Length: 115
Image 1 (spheres, rainbow, N blue to C red):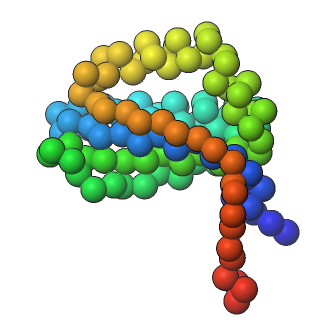
Image 2: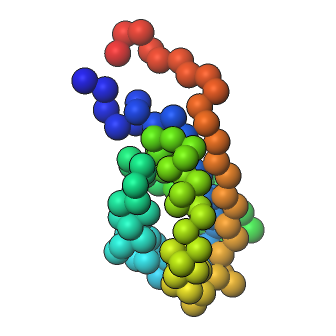
């Protein structure tokens, strides 16, 4: 049986760098509800967080969300009330973060045949 990651055909990636003095606040916000709320949206399947190289003394992360379809992402992204609430929750530490979002469909995939 395939796992949820193989069902993902669309991905949202949110890369961010956070100042050291805001890092614990940002990670607490993500871990204490924000990520679970995003993954709970219709069509969202999972999220994984990567640690990236630091830039200019700020630690970097990437949140990768697996989504079942472009349509599910577009419904989420068009939810203005939800986006406004997320922006308000982020406001206390917004000036201590640099955020870059991108998204797209799987165009090519290779799997290890031995697994």
